[in-house]
Length: 144
Image (tube, rainbow, N blue to C red; front, side, top):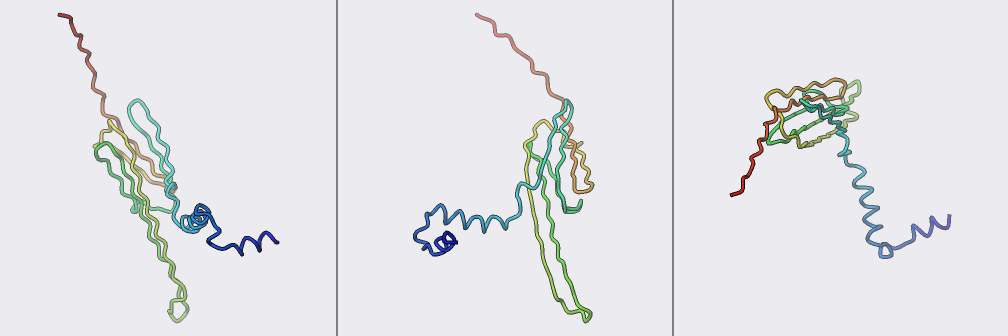
């Protein structure tokens, strides 16, 4: 118990900057949404990439998928308003939840015209067919 009393009696001037910001960052960053929550598996096959992205709590309509300049971008936006009223129609509680995520994946050699996606039970599956690889031709350099 004496340790607890001493800890709370410390002046802010006695704190090191690292401990001050460590404690501040815990309070601040613990309230932010988990930016790593877009868990992704990418498998490369001979003819395509197969992606599985976990997006629990999102709907098909809240997703935006685009492929441009070798990057597949997934945006997910979820805005929920929960409202409760009493018998007289007076609002007694209203809560809002906003969660937006975006992630880009570098995937070259993709046939963008034939990308297919499906979404079921919070799991997004994307198939990205590869463009046929061009055959590299070696050129022999002769002396002379």
